[in-house]
Amino acid sequence: MIHHVLATLARRAEDRPISPITDEATAAAAFVSQQRYVLGCMFAPLIFDILLLGVFLMQVYTYFTYQKNDRWITKAVVLTVLFINLCFSGYHTYFIQWLFVENFGLWAPFFNTKRLAWGPFIDSLNSFVVQVFMSYRAYRLLNRQIWIPIVVTALCLTSIGATLSVLIIFSNLNSLIDAYRVKIPELLWLTSVMCADLIITISIIYGLSKSKTGWAHTDKTIGKLVRMTIEGQVPPFLIALIFMVEFINTPDNLLGATLQNLQCKFYAVGMMYSINARVSFQRDINDARSHNGQVFAMNSRPNPTQIQVAVETETYVNGPYDSSYPDNRKDEDSLSDTEPKVVAYSSQAQLTDPHRT
Image 1 (cartoon, helix red, strand yellow):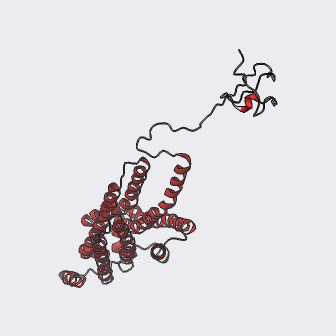
Image 2 (tube, rainbow, N blue to C red; image 1 turned 120 degrees about the vertical axis):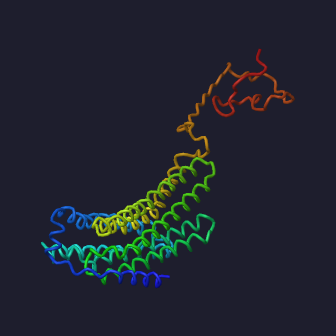
């Protein structure tokens, strides 16, 4: 399938001649009215990428600190995503220094497409690992519905093939002016990524909603999981959606590069956010067990915070015991009431005289 797509793209690329390399005078004339915008679109993503990389590294540190006994497959996924994101940050840093350091003051390198094409390919590898891992969680949550990981994996492989075709086509172009030639693989990449995100998000939310039991504590936990699923999955989906709309309208606009460079870290941070949530959930469960024993549906009633038991003891002594009173053991009185030896205020003390009138 991918070979047919590449062949079709190659035939369409031959319909129109490839534009020549954009010289410095042409590039400077093209950017003279929007220099601040162009510089911002290329330099700002590096700032956000480094910032999100720091957040991601702290999440990885938290994971290996509190979940070092986790399954090896989850550890392998975390390490793989960490390696890919470090490679992406290294590539992005190199690309920016190539623009602003090695080619300082020049505008022609902004039209170069050979270095720009590596971003989508690395991003597709990152989204492949993240989305396949999240699809496995949805598969477990929905009673092992095997179609979920199969469809998501197929969509992820499609996105990798599309970005690989973008890399090949961009490597043969001379200028960003011909960016329209990669419109089909770019749209195929973004569409497959968005479809995979939608399937994962809807499946997880549906599975969590079915897990509600009517118990207040369980339903509250499920509500938190639904909110966290939306927080982790929706941001990269929105980035891809905005990128696709922007690319359809203006394929040669550098705003697409800004959105593209943010997508990789959003996937990584969202995945680690959902994995590390187990630590906070376990802490909340332990706190609820130690401080709140009422987990039924009507948990709006105030819980007792302190139980007080008041014990009052009263002792009555009605005169001295008369030892001359005959001992009648046939009576129903206890023997302690007829014993001549009485220890006052002890366990055998004479408290009342039942025969006294």
